Length: 102
Image 1 (cartoon, rainbow, N blue to C red):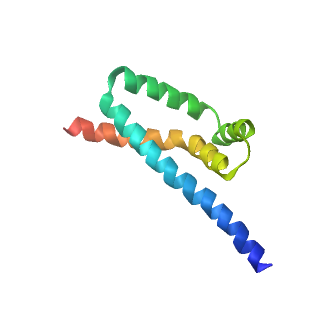
Image 2: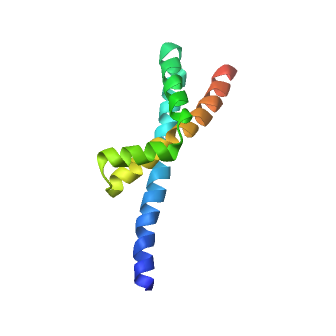
Image 3: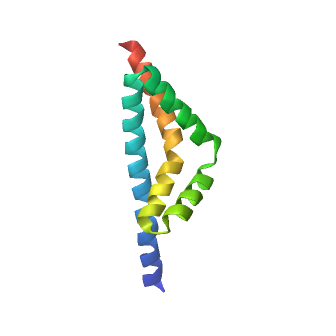
């Protein structure tokens, strides 16, 4: 019984930690690059983020898994895409604050 719990926890931890690590890293990089690029690049990317935030992350994740299949990598990718918008929004606001100080 314990071995089944440990085996299940291994998969859950892989998905959880993998999605958070990739999501935060990708969101940070996207936010910094588009904010410093400014202009139309920043505006277009923020409209994309607004559209992503209009839909619940779980709905986006379910749609992605339905299209791509239910492998572990696809589940991690779906969760990353679902959580990307709030990370980008938060990092962008901080980068804008720092950019205005310069």
